[in-house]
Length: 484
Image (cartoon, rainbow, N blue to C red; front, side):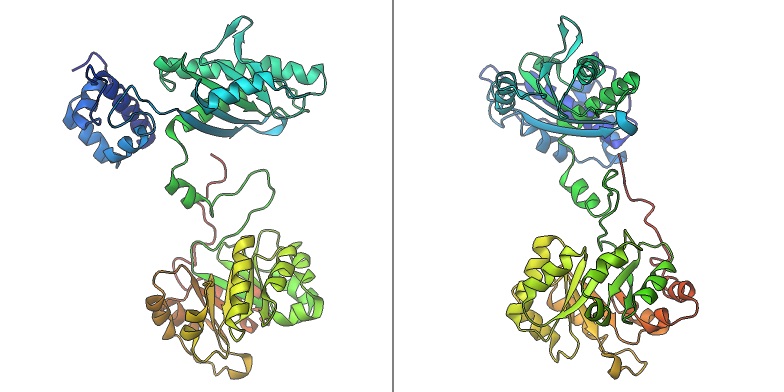
């Protein structure tokens, strides 16, 4: 056992940080005279931490940590065969903290002096830019922090008042954060003279509170360093949050269809004021899609989408273009008017549908295909090279009988295209009773028109659908991460 007294971590993140440092330290200490080393082991890591192996197993089980995660993280630092042959460290960190004009945003690089980061560090000194002159981060005059850190202003420094914020609270904050990170073990002590840091700092021209400038930049720098050393974010974190997170400065959210089921309200009546009236009565819910119907688009053009956006800024809007030709062109037109999704007619040639879906995906919006009057939807989809994001099973208004129709194909679609990621929507005379059956059979989206738009109580009519299942009753995603 070592003389280290390791306390039990409070959470999974802290355990991973402790294990990573201990595993790297153990790999260095256990190398033989020829510099060769074996992969870190749980026993060796526990010994390095000064705890019993069984204690470490208990912690890992409690916080759901797989030791393979640690092995993967240290591969970038240690060669499997030779500790002396350390790959050039090149890590990236970012953090946004604070509010108001004093808000801090830090981007940084950390790595070896003789690697890519070292080159960037040297280039920063030798290639000066007016208003963005880099400077060393110093704790006080004549006392730079280590690893040596080059502080680069993001915003153009136009006068001595701006320069004072950079050379004063910002510089001190970054330097102190670096020094404290060394003391706390975030940055390994043996890397002080091997690594350098390039730190890009945002200071708003109207920032005036020096105390807050210092506080926010200190915290942001420290957080960015932790994230860089942990290689944050993981693939799982990025994929999980990409459709849930909302950028705090953008001013609006980009809705994505990541957790069905959804209720799609079809605004088909060619009357702008009526459409706005319906939208104004829609209850707050992440489960609602607004369909800008074909008649509405035919009367007002795709500009109607931007017009309705004024009433429902954050709503997911799908433009029912029913495209039959020139697929790419129609997608572009709707996209320019802020549509989140577009609909093509399944009767269109496969080539048109391929161009339609390809363009939608290229622009980052959803491409849907409406199977209205398509006799063999599966056959049509098999002919397409680009698979749609949404498949709409649709009965025309003149074919409605009040009964569900064609729901048996939902299961067949899932089985036939089990390697594809897509949503299935059901439309045509949908009532709460038939909607429940469609959801039970696997529909992701229920498309409703007259039941809602012609109701005397629009909100109540919508609630009749939202209360069909426990999932749909979850109006707002309370777990969405906005800012960390």
